[in-house]
Image (cartoon, rainbow, N blue to C red; front, top):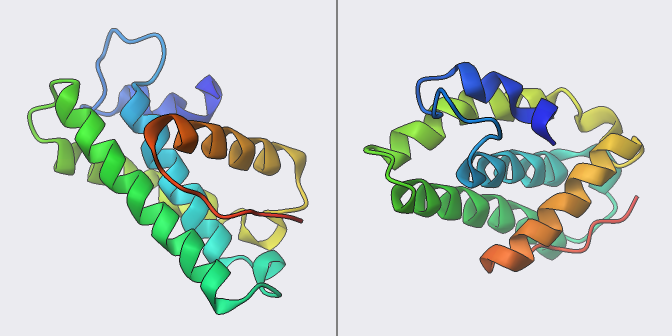
Length: 128
């Protein structure tokens, strides 16, 4: 997972001395992941309710990222999360075509579901 947010360490929003990206950055990445899930053609056969659940999960991950950033002492958590979403959303949009058929993408979805459980973010069932 560290490589997935390596660019975050370059951004001013992330602590310069951090070896691992902060938890809020992973929550932001999970927001981008579930947004991509909701847009994926692989996910096209699901109901509108399931697609809406993926969109809702993306929003909840983002909201939780902002809250955790604030708890971590970020002076402007909303802006800090927004600054990395500019990178994360296009990154995951570029994976949409094969989102549910590539093992590393599925690993991220699994990770996000676990993180979501820990943070109280309900995620929809995603199957390839």
